[in-house]
Image (cartoon, rainbow, N blue to C red; front, side, top):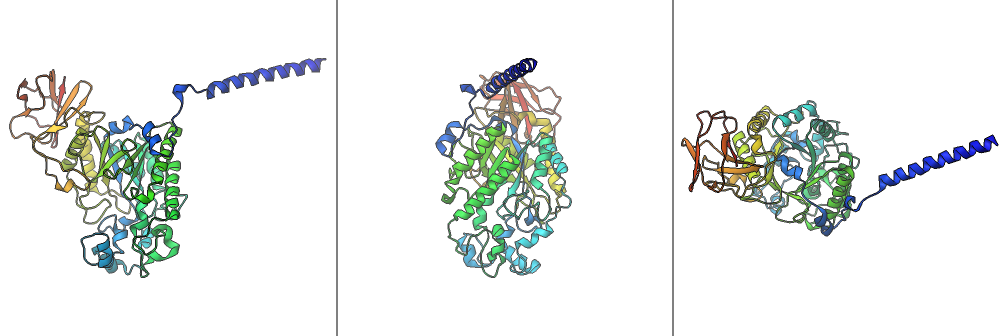
Length: 510
């Protein structure tokens, strides 16, 4: 009898526990209608319906791009060295609509310094790409000091060499060259120090990046995973095998590094990839939901609409917009005027140019993604470091006018016009003391003078009497400013002390 009672008590206890568990589990998995997660389907209608540009991206304003790979070993020409080194004939270059009429200067440079491209091809630079001085913590500390809020290392460039621990190709930095997970180390350090971390994929153009001729090593099938499996026909369409390879590499990058930003270069916009574009967008955005964070795709094809408006954040290479775009956008450009990767004749922009670009872009609702080019040993040249630190000093003083701001009713005023579109930055003139840009935050309006006025005062015509100004101060200055408003605009007397060497911010309390 005792055993029966004990068995009954145990059974009742187990039933009670099970019932509680079931109720608990039911409560955990219960989903209210308003809490249902959005699931993106691999078509533009679904993506347009559910996608919204994350506010965090628009608030960050300034990020760092990194072009670093085996192409930094020869340090000649640009990061397109692996393409140019095989450009040996006028016919080949003409078909690519390039200006040179004969072999490229890089082709001749390679022959002179490294020998013929059959005996010493691009693959042979990889063992020399050691990155022996690479220190992810030092890089991230520098980027934080520059005032950057996000970092986007190049994960896959056109050359086919992955800068991470790849599960889909042996040609990666973990297996060869540095023999380290470069992307992984940067992600770990960056996230530990509060930075948003992204990755860029330029891999689609790997299909047509290399010239395929029998007197080059590019036709050797054992290197097809590096040089692509395309044949010698320049017009050969992208094969399904390569498209699958692109997909596998991109999914590997997404799944294993969970980037907050996924930046795509050109060539993904061509018709051959049309079926994969909505698929990759849906896959990545659904992963963002799984990771419980908003993620961003940057797409460089502003005019092609390969990714329809309202599905990604558009990006302009070395170019800007002439006015406000109400949807967020981004300019990617390099500190280097002549290259993205380190080259021995690297020519830097000035800090003033870059700061002015940042201000102009932000006033039009954009972000700036600024590239650095480290040396093959993993060091960032001192000149580039100094420029980043000077930008950081300016942002330490004036960042209130940049971070977390919105565009105003007009982006600015002044005589200097900005050219529009990709690769247009070389056509732009420097800004003057009459050029003013505006941003706003809560009850603050920021009037940013791109240079110190030649007179002892500034007239801001865009500020009307209806804009009731309560107070004005200059960021970085302790001087009490004199000012007045009338039908002509806002007159502000400049302080005697000049706070800094670059753009100057008037903070207006409204």
